[in-house]
Length: 158
Image (cartoon, rainbow, N blue to C red; front, side, top):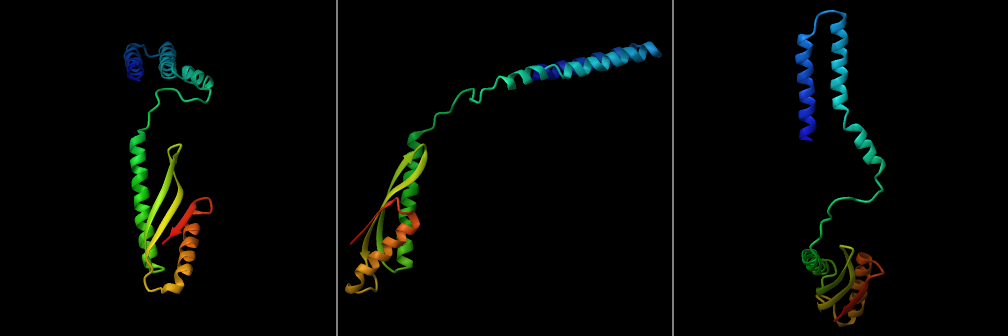
């Protein structure tokens, strides 16, 4: 790129210097027009190479590829799972009023985070009595299925 800019600047300066030396008249105007065409030709010199390179592009990426750090990605996904576990505990503590401990199983597929399973242990049923345990467990299961979908394995236990 630097050589191209220097070439264009050199052609313009050379043309300007020659234009100052030209005689005033028809021959001077003709040579001035030729010098202008010369400057335009120098500026358009890389265009055929660019068009040729676009025509040869086969859709594949060229150049070096960057290797992703698998350890870093796994650490970030682990932190995300821990954050989701804390959010689930807060969610169930506020809405149904039960204390839970959540564990999220996750998998990495093509550098993407996917939840494969959710296990929730109900540690405290709050204000619900002994006869309402099954209702609370069903309510927690339904809420987890609504959050994560039917393809995620959901386990709720006491």
